[in-house]
Length: 211
Image (cartoon, rainbow, N blue to C red; front, side, top):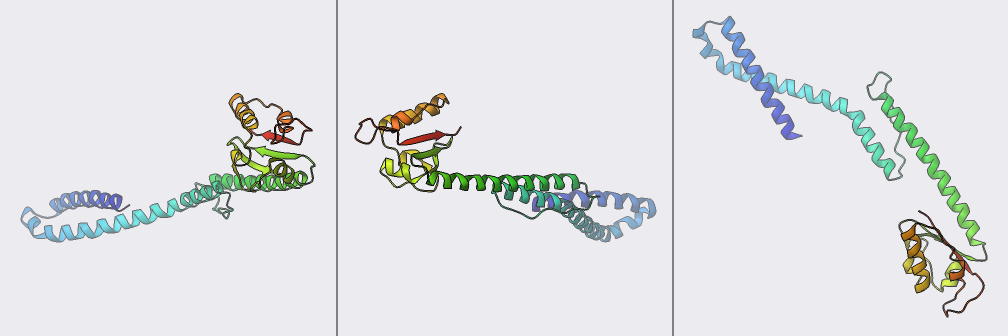
């Protein structure tokens, strides 16, 4: 910012000085040019400073909507709820600001629906008699119910975490790794039917992998 203003000031000063010199030579005799050069230079510096100040004030004022929209989009990426940007219809950025406002409204609605569906799913999982675990495409556990925790004989954190913190059976870990490698959903009930002792039994759990 400081470098840009310095460059603007230098260019403006040189331009004004050239113009002033040309005007002085046209209006004043050659004998009087030398006597007014000092005043001319001082006047040039003052006028240049005023011009640069006005230019930067106008530039910052024009950039205010752009800065506001940038901060708004950054807040939306963090799932925040920044205030809507209100611009006059004559503003050059009015259409863009309205589009960002509508996008935020749609995003917030989608986030609320997702949160509601997630809560409903958690309540449903809590009452299921079999263990259920949902693993996302980052290989992290999104949710799991108490029946799954009981089956795996471990306490499952409600926060997202790598599934390897909860699942230690080699056969089941290999199956999940194969699902991620092939991007093909395979049934895991038969594998979950095996307890920690390795004996086959009734299906006690189900794994769901999201891609």
